[in-house]
Amino acid sequence: MTKVLLVSGSWPPQVCGVGDYTQVLSHELASIGIGVERFASDRFSQLYAPSILDEIERTDCDLIHVQYPTAGYGRSLTPSAIARRIRSRPVVVTLHEYSVFKPYRRAWFSPFARHCAARIFTTGEERALFEQRFPRRRGVDTTIEIGSNVPSAADGRRQPNLVCYFGLIAPNKGLEAFLELARLARMSSSSLTFELIGAVPDRFRRYADDIITQATASGIKVAPQLPDHEVAAHLAGATFAYLPFPDGASAKRGTLAAAFVNGLIVATQHSTITPDWIKGATLETAGPQDALGALTRLQADPTARADLSRRVEKAARHFRWDAIADRHAALYESLLRSPLISNDSEKHGGAELLRSSRPRKHALADGAIRPQ
Image (cartoon, rainbow, N blue to C red; front, side, top):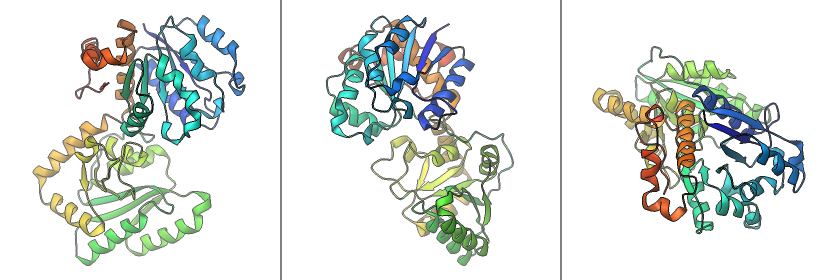
């Protein structure tokens, strides 16, 4: 059994999105037979804590996987020092939200570029930016998206004409466009029906109350403040979603992930941050009028609808936690078979090494590990 030490500066119940992610990942890895040990320490609050490095070095594991950043690390240099210190085993790092860091924080990331056996990014944009800033890197770079926080509901009876919106009921989320789509559909005597599924942040309560009032008056069903499993059930009961992200659809969008894992056909906007696999699995629309036309045409074309649903199912693998764990396992196994892959050698055959070294039990239909 492969044994992995997952290092995070924060774990639940501490409030930290990366800590929550790492907790779920640990459970999913364990469920597919990876031995997982969690590492946490309040000494991460120190700028540099050599005792943490000593403790990690003594840990009985095959591979060390660091999650960075977390709230618990603060500005500590210790997490990046792990890769520089530990040479006996591969060190992997998942870099969450790398793009938010200012250039003066380069010293925190140089060891990850120079000493890690592999770096995981959650979007292609994050990975491309890191590769641009650190052209001389060692090891493997790959992208594994963040899983959906909303589970996949059991297959239920979909309402063939139902279009839903899902997300925070807050400003700049495209809610006005959703209301306009419903108005246009009503004016054109369309058979489409609409449901607004959303959570209400306390600081936007007044705004949310106004949106809910407008939606109810327009005949839109409203389902606010639902727990995740009920959100999943509502999503699985619809056929379409309209998610007009102002800056375009991307792999960072948790609402898009939830829609995909629950099989919804999504009408949305594309932009430069929209990867090809999302473009191929969504309806590109420029606004409510365009969305109404696209959804109406798809309603009338069962062949096109079935084809797009198949592409949605394939894209959903990027956001399913079981598939995410499987992709981590494949990466771990490839590193343990050849832990000293250099970046240049990986470019000239490492991708094939990763695929060929992957056991059949971890195979994915779309070849999820794509280092380059």
